[in-house]
Image (cartoon, rainbow, N blue to C red; front, top):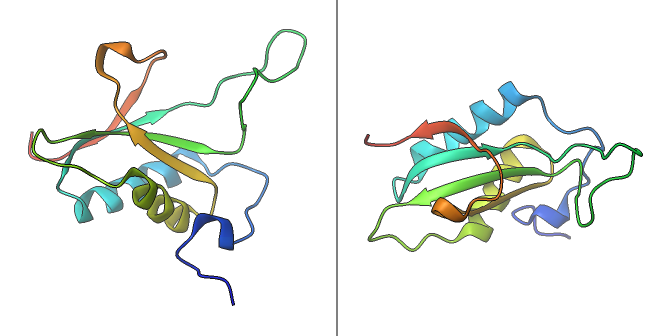
Amino acid sequence: MADPSTAEARPRCARPPRILDVVAAVKSLAQAHPEISAWWYAPALRLRLAGELPVGVEPTRVEVVAERRPDADPDYACLGRELAARLDADAIVRAHRGAREERHLFRVASVGR
């Protein structure tokens, strides 16, 4: 029997979750993880003019960026699995890159600010 705590163990639908579902899931996750000071939504990259996806893009994966507290060392893979389980969709949580962020992010939740 597959382990239900892993993102790969559950079949995922092809359609991404609605933004309101993402916001609700992130806010719920934020309450359980005070080591993260801010949660950001990274919108999916759009199709290019010719209709093809940019290289390496998975259009149905939800990407959330977590800004950790200075004294914290979060397990981003574990956070991603928790988010995926809450959304019942493919999801990834990665570290905030600060000024090196390559695209615009939207703040979803802040803890203790």
